[in-house]
Length: 269
Length: 263
Image 1 (cartoon, each protein chain N blue to C red):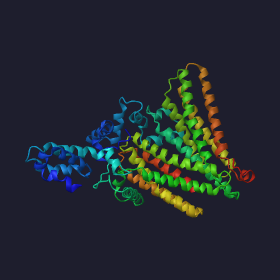
Image 2 (cartoon, rainbow over the protein chains, first blue to last red; image 1 turned 180 degrees about the vertical axis):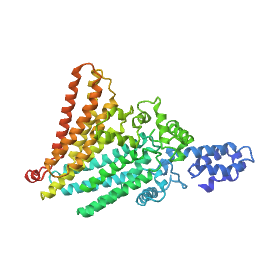
Image 3 (cartoon, rainbow over the protein chains, first blue to last red; image 1 turned 30 degrees about the vertical axis):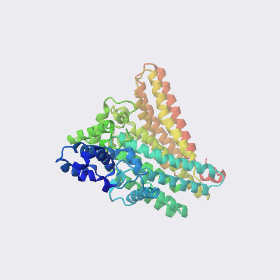
Image 4 (spheres, helix red, strand yellow; image 1 turned 90 degrees about the horizontal axis):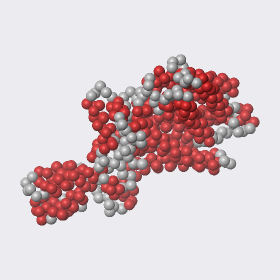
């Protein structure tokens, strides 16, 4: 697309004088570019010589900066779009497999970030809820499977109860923990925090899957403690910039409680 | 307003179409950064004190305007109820304490009761299957006592003209629940006599805390019949203690082998 539509910027005098409509549509098409300001700035010196293309240049700048947060743009780009994501390539007429793979790659990248928490912390600022949903569902399925395996007569009732309570505890819990941080005066986005809390469930999900294989308490207990510590450490690291000076512990304590109750449910299942 | 991410964390969203709500927090933050002697959350809290609609999130930040030290202090003062608790609150009752203490009590009750249950089952040579029903039971009992009772007490004391503050009554009840956290942990010990001692002790401490502070509120009333509220308080508290003891701290080896029920 870029070879065709870059023309108005390369030769602004000719194209915009003869085809003003075309140049306007071209600047709208260029919104998918990752840095609209750089397009505007590179086009600006050329626009100084002729008088006519100035409105088209300013138009491209405005649309480019405003549509970086446009939800329509986000829907076209893929399923798990966060607030700040932008793509270089055209995502409208690509195959579904490519879109799915890119979203899966994003989720995998964030999971990797959770497992090795010393890396780039801005990966999770580009939030999505697909990863948390996937982790929450797998945790609920694993725990309810174990509940159905353990007990026989009232196992079916317990299975449904376990699935429901895991699901409710994960989502309501992360929402309440986030609201608590906001109410204490923290500067944090709601969905970013929910996303971080959801992704940091990953060590606990791994521990739950390992628990399927072994039932020895001597393997389970250290594993649970390690997973709990890992999840808490990762999430506290991600939420380091909440801007709470002397009430940080008040925001962190519910987070520990949240992971502790999930770790406990994994342990006793 | 919660759907739009905070511009401070993701700077590119600051030019969103409706910058009204999120901007207010950012402006407060910018103000506080201009005056460095003030922490940022303080500015947001101060910003929220003004006229805010009751359905907005900012309205509720004034109930969460506490520091870590204050909350720890209030918890300790509720365990050693020597001072008058309304002086400890200092005219700034919070909802953080009642909310998270009641949640902690629920989780600790669930954790310790299943721990005691599995311990008893192991000593009795049985397999233990945990009971999720206990969790919902704990939620029901603790929330009913931690938020339902103060509402009734507040209404009753208002009827007698004591001019109670609802938040203060909720705080007295919420922080009064703190004692059940150590009691629950100690009640893992698989001996019924020891458990009765701990439950009675914890119940005594919290009922003393409750009566002492409610008496301070009730003494503002003219009618002496208002003292009957204290009796109702004591009865309600005794019922709670017995419920907790019977439902959560009653696993024993004998019962486990005898009935196989654990209750």
